[in-house]
Image (cartoon, rainbow, N blue to C red; front, side):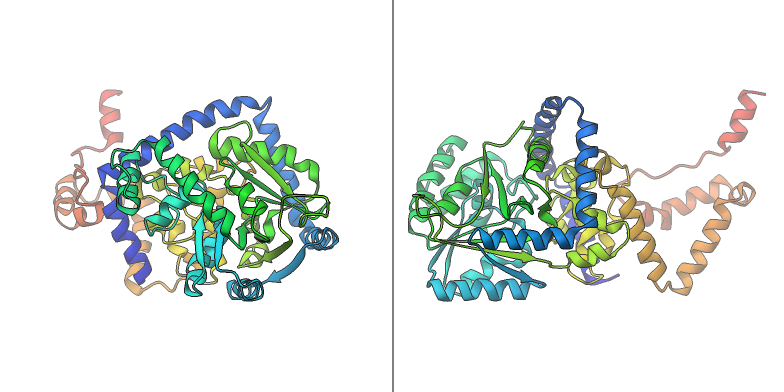
Amino acid sequence: MEEREKIFKAQSEKVGFDLQHRKVIRYNIGQYNQAVKRGKNYFHSLDAAKEQASDIKNYVLDDIERLLTQFEEKAVQNGCEIYWASTAEEVLECVDRAIEIEQVKRVVKMKSMVSEELKLNEFLEKRDVEVNETDLGEFIVQQAGERPYHILTPAMHKSKEDVAELFNQKFGMDENSKPEEIAEFVRDYLREKFCASDLGITGANFLISETGSVGLTENEGNGMMTFSWPRVLLTIAGIEKILPEWGDLDLFWPLLSVHGTGQQITAYNTILSGPKRENEADGPERMIIILFDGGRTRLYEEEQIDQTLKCIRCGACLNACPVYQTIGGFTYETTYTGPIGSVISSYMDGTEDTGFLNFASSLCGKCTEVCPVKIPLHHLLLLNRKKIVEGHKSKGVEKFFMNNYKKFMLSRKKLERVNAGWKNRAMKGVGMKVWGPRRSPLVFAKTSFSKSWVKKHP
């Protein structure tokens, strides 16, 4: 077994039976489920909306090169600077140049998963640049020295008591502080950071090809201050974020908010179309957009797997997944977790190190059911499994076992050759190591179900 897979299994064993962790996660996801159930009622026909969104994203995949080129042309006309980056290293080179030219000492950063792909905070801190996360959840995990637990709700793994304890340790707040008091403290704390920062960094929820605009959505107003006050704005966006037209936001913003938080629409939705004009009081003097590949082309080149580029990062598949609910977000050790992360991670980092995550699924299909853009996630997990198995050089013992297992499972006579007594003895010995020490042992009946049925129904 590869080292990374060993670590994953060990962490899964530990976290899966941490009852306090399970209690917090299930409570938080339970709150989410209630909100989303209400939110879905906003749609006259949710299925029709999902079908339409899926069709638009399929159109994007068919014409992505032209749409991205058009976006670049329009954004440059709007006064933006556009850079293309294939790798994380190329993105960080662009960031480094901007820091040096603008003599950046302090950064405020809107929540962005693509920045987690880049390990951007670590990069900036090594260059003695102060980085402040401005989303409350991101701010909490930054203070805890952790990475985001969840695509949409970074601090989902923490209870209000955990957060109060953290803020007591970090800022000397009362250890019994209420969530409202913590939020007020963070708002005041960050206000000074917004005023003094040289650079604001955002991701992008959507890129509008028609107008060369960036669409951003949030609930706290921190995003608006991130791109309104600093003199320079840097937006780093994955190339899959592209949408053809301005009007597509009428569909995608409600779908994202309903599946992400259960809201009809989030509190703040902003469309950025370049740096501020002469007659505008607020906004950056300079706007830089980096279009980032980061393995997305590898996904695009894989038949069927390219469907994952339709993802709008709502996090619905994570919340629906029984495996994610049990082992949590940190166990995956990847930027994107849950079903979507399991499918895409090995393509995005260009290695096979995370291929085993495709087997960390019950294949219940709930992830496919809840996806707002109709990505067939559980089918893609199976497809990846098939590729891994076909490319795997099985050991002689493994081949022998699987071949004989197949023969026995296809023949009732062969299965019944070993009586219940021997099966139960095997279960108590070697069998329990395979079955799992935390499970009750299987007890084989003396008579098979078919024979018992015949006796009862002659």
